[in-house]
Length: 467
Image (tube, rainbow, N blue to C red):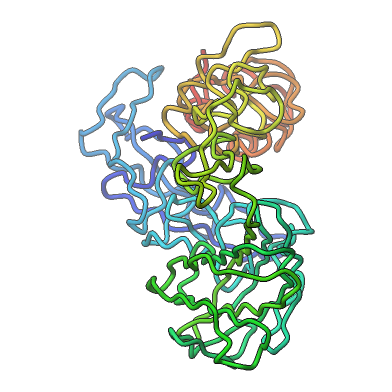
């Protein structure tokens, strides 16, 4: 498990670090150190390494701990490396490599089961905060780039009109049960909240209606369909309620007639809120005489564009089936994992340098001058989020600690932290904040010159090894 230098003191024996206070300091009040900030220290008389934490009011540093002989190191030029328990997501302790840890593995709250903070665009609905989350910034697909449903679905007949065509991908629409009331019920159930949609069959053929509960939604979904009349229960042509709470539903194909109107009810067994995605697919009678259009293979374990396939006729010519595509060659710069190896743009030029936040970096991405940077592979091995999702501030921090590169700085520092030179300005190293920390304990470094003592503190205070 990767130990990030600004988080490592979390589990040191006998030292408990609590969360940062957000209460503002009184105007004009000065502090001797950053409240609750933990830094490396030497135990008096022994040379043993430990950690000390700034008091809550910033008045001064606390006792150097553990100082019990467990981390003895008499060489002042080689700081000891504390050992820590392996981080475990879901244990209610924010540990190295985690953005958060709320003590559970629920994807519906602010901290995901991967111990990453929930955010709009991650494809997972944060219940009570987001109305929907389809993982993209397309504002025309029913879910906006701010994770809001464009228009609440209709809960009364004749319902919202869907434009169903022969496109094999089908017609999709999203909604949320929380904005609805219980008005309808199918023969297989559905006494809870429901939405109504209608469509006109574009031709003679079959319709398949499927309902996907968005990630985190716990509603028990039901689908029932009526032909010709929205209010007549005896006109029901399909009803499915096979799954439990939170499960997806899909109807068997039912026959439709060109020009006839059909009414689809997205229903539920109770009043549990939560987002849903409805998909209506039309298969014309003649569709299986040849090869159809593109389709999706419903297997989330397959990554990249290889989830796309082609509709082909079954052996008995009775229906179209989705035949998965095969991995392609990687296309640089398109944002897809074309060859399905789990990395975007592998083998391409790196989208940015390792000291900058940005898109995910493939372990074998090429530097501007050619060749690869072994540090990327090390960071990705320890934290695959950096190479699968995005290269965030924690990944930059991993470069500093894991790859032991003390010259990885951000913003506009006059020179690398590990080199002597002109004074540095607090904040010039961005999220690293090492300069700010050092200057609060030694104003000479930011007021006069960044000398050898300041460079030594890059390691002793910030924990960043200088080569």
